[in-house]
Amino acid sequence: MNKIINILKKQKAIPIDQFINVALYNKKFGYYMKKNPFGKHGDYITAPLVSNLFGEIITLWCVAFWEYLKKPKKIYVVELGPGDASLCDKMLKTSKIFENFYNSVEFRLLEKSKVLRKLQKNKIRNKKVKWVSTIQELKEGPIIFLGNEFFDSLPIKQLYKKKDQFYEKYVTFLKKDKKINFLFKKAKKNLIKNIKKWNLDTEKGIIEYPDKAIKYLDIITKKINKYDGCLLAFDYGYNQNKNQNTLQSINKHEHVNIFYDIGSSDITSHVNFKLFTKVLNKRLKVEKIISQSKFLQRMGIIERANILSKEMSFKSKADMYYRLRRLLHNDEMGNLFKVLFAKNKKTKFSLGFD
Image 1: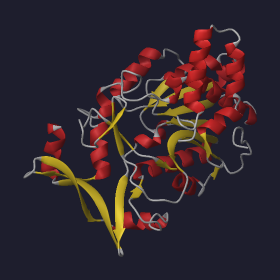
Image 2 (image 1 turned 135 degrees about the horizontal axis):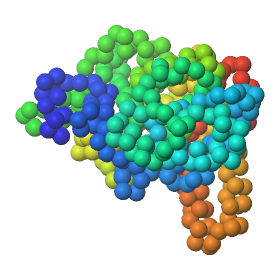
Image 3 (image 1 turned 120 degrees about the vertical axis):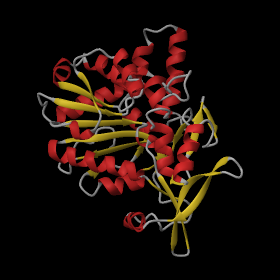
């Protein structure tokens, strides 16, 4: 906390996205740079940790996409923010069932946290896996970009509009009260221009602008158009035109104040899938956004579970179906998590989305 206060004292006030970036990615004390936040002993649990079936289904989808592309000799699966590498690990194991695909596939893990890279490298020891720090390092394809809870971890800007004036949310340190708080300042012209470009000012409420995510989408789009491939992303979010404050902070599986234990709490926001679709559709084609539950069920996850259950003990079977419920049920991850599939405009592949 003292370290972020020192930064605020020097700069007086910083935009909310800069505050999030420092809290999550500062090399000395950033949340993702110093700890493993995943699992029951961390702060949250992702789908690959909930059930191995998630990784199996994603692998099957990738195999089908590779087959649609007429089985190229090389295909790259690039995982954006691979976390503790559970998804990659399961995909490698499942890929071995499909010998020709396994011989063709190469995995690239986009990770900038040294702590998480070390964790991933301890879990995965396979020559097919290499690490990259930027998407620009990818020089051939086709490429399947995979994102599971990647975009929600990127910093966002927040604004509100009053009469015809836009105000951007900043974070400051109040010396008198000795605490961190928000303040609003008149937004810069370039930011207002982007807000209007994507029609984000048409609804009342807090405007969230995912500047960092849009930059990632732009780079991914260029790679897909140059080398062929697609983007398959799973994230929690919404698909309507609405403005709302979705910033939240999580510590040990509990929601906490955004200024609570800075650097030791995760800060995330909901993905605006409506906006992502607009951005990507400029140069790619986005299939209809569907729920995680629909996608996994269309891909046969229940049938796969039923097959596996025949060889299981009652206890193992109960555990598997409990985990499956967490992935699929509307009260759990099923409806809150959405799936986005963006592809080259010439690509007809739509498995799981039609």
